[in-house]
Amino acid sequence: MTLAHEVSDGLASSLAQRIQPTFGYYRQPNGWVKYAPVTRLERLRYEEQGWKCLAEYGFFDVTAYSGNHPLEGLFMFGGAKELPTEQILQMGLYIDPPLVPRCKQHLTQFHRAHRAECWRGATKVEFPQMADVKPELIGPFVCDFCQRKMPTAQAREQHQLVAHTKPLGDIRTGTSLGKALAEAMNGSKTVPSQDALLKRIAELEATTAQPVRAQFPPGKVRVTCECGRSHKKGGETLHRRGPAHQEWAKKEAQPA
Image (cartoon, rainbow, N blue to C red; front, side):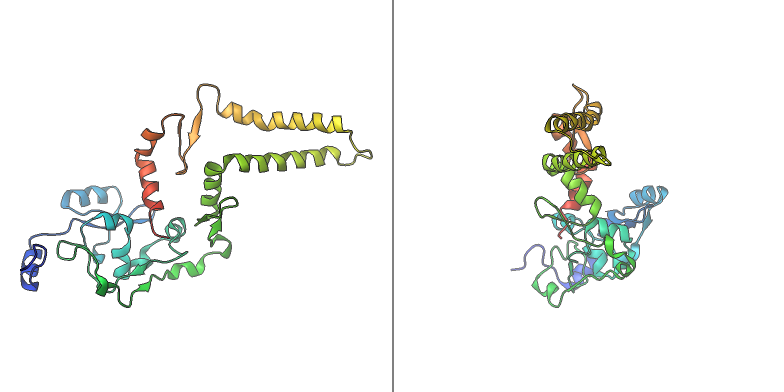
């Protein structure tokens, strides 16, 4: 008995002439590549906004798998060269490049998922544009507190600001106090008394905390999310449903 999704090559070829996949790849004005609908009206709308459809890499259907592997179809047909260096760095694709199936078949109703034979001889994506990247920009950049690997130094800093606010704040406060005390004692021929040092530390702590109070006045406390955006305290659920957080979440879901 033939299952509903199993069709002969001839029938599949005939049906393919009438049923077209509805997603493909675009290059956005900022150079980044992503998939989006390629129906007639949607493609026209995107192109009016300055997007370029990369039709040479084919079209496909979007599934849950596609959401977790958004660039696999592009890589499968040699499109790794289309990605700007910034996108490769920001998405961390260079750290452990993804494998590319060998079947060269986009996900459609006739190829709903890659099977074992699709992965035989699979190789990792190569990014020739990374050859010109400065060594100091290449990670992974490991978190100082939880050892999580981040693709860029900026991503590590943002992660530490959000996930490790207190220990990071303690370190920065200690560093600031140490520098200020060193400057205060510079050139002094006598060692300040304990009371004098404690008084100076209290003054510096008050100075350090002042910008924080000014930035977040009473009644208007904002919380910084791991995606880098801030929201009012208590508005986490609404923020996570927003497009900015959703876009960040999709990038975080990419395989390392």
